[in-house]
Image (tube, rainbow over all chains, first blue to last red; front, side, top):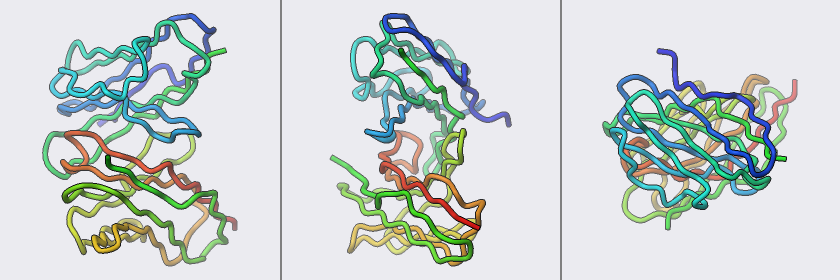
Length: 114
Length: 114
């Protein structure tokens, strides 16, 4: 079990540029979540998928943010255009659908927008 | 809406000291409660959980009891080690932590000094 894999680990970009974060969930996990972590707000749920279908995107802050899950083994979170206030650590997590299944987190992508 | 409140950090203790990190919650119905731990540069990992009132979750010497009457889930450890230094998150959810994501507290940074 390789765990949840996120790439890149670090991303530095200039304001206005497009940023794409990537996630490979654990094989067999039906749920995939994108979280954002900042000092001010803590850990916020942005969006989650069940069987590749977006279920709740109410946490996505603005239309500049979009997420896709084209298949069971890959998801992307895109920010276009990026802004300095988007700087944060973005985590992907996956889980099984059964009751009492914990979330398994990736190591995160640290995004810095200058 | 649901919310989780944790004591502010950082919490600094000496090795072998007794640890308590307070957590209270506001929620409708009967959530499950969790403690996650985040080591530097890593994603969150499940530490322990409790799914109903009066349940006690335990792992690696840590314990927490689900107290419905006080809406609390305080984390305790009798003798901390330097390796316990990390950020600890209290969280609640309704499907065991999988199906609909979790609501997290802001985290408590624990520093253990030798």
